[in-house]
Image (cartoon, rainbow, N blue to C red; front, side, top):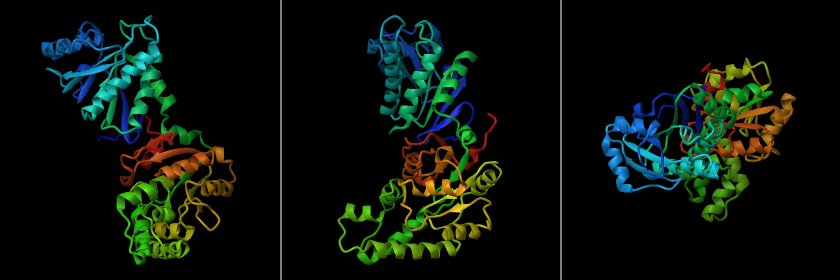
Length: 403
């Protein structure tokens, strides 16, 4: 999947691409394009007419075989001679029929559900009902972007969702709504008074080192950590060692001793220099140093371990404060570490934007009254981030791209 986002016309939602283009939808070689259909599934004028002309008579024959579709619904046919493999016919409302907003939302949602049901990964939609059906363009943009955001943030095979729009006015209406509902992460950072960067999983590829240290600490109890379970319940949700004990019904585990052993082993791994920074981490630190506003690394990992990893990667001084975990500061999803970082920087929590790679971290940022920004890393592919205000495919997206 091409993650050339964020830009002025594309965003990341649920780790998937939502983008806007201006042009002819019938020219797109997607898995499916969406036809703004009528209830009789007759390919008449506008986009439907263009589909009929370019796709050939076979599409209409398939529609005739289906026989019709209710307003707010959608059905699938082949793509005929179109570059697209399929056409999804979504029946939007005519203005004046009543309950038009709900019907349009249903039509957009139905089109995406049809795509998901058939395992389609690339789908393009027009501005449904804004032609001869007379639906207001700005309202169509609001409803369509909202349904697209909802769909991409859930469990779906759709990886790239494109709104293909006819004319500059339509593109600008959808762009304005995209900015409102799915803000550009660089704009979120630009509006913030301070920036907090998580460390583990965000700047440093250290999650496996944490798992190895915990695995070694659990080994004397005859228990092994499953990688996927660890990523889900520890890394993402923050249930920790206590959660592991409860889920597996383990007995006789001394949690205090286990945590101490884990800390010793992880510190040794940090000092050994085997934990690498992500390729974009140093550029992100340079960005934070040059921001002209307070910035810090904020991590429940001990400051000494964070600095050991940085030194091992050749970063003797990150140029911004490192606020590390210590006894008395609760782990995420508790907001303690972020509140402590705001205190160290001398800023209000409400001024802070936080870049995080896990749901526990995003929830901690929300609990602290801060604005959470998710960054996609290999260990969180496919995981939903409903708490995030914006998503980054990598830390390079912190800076405005000029798109």
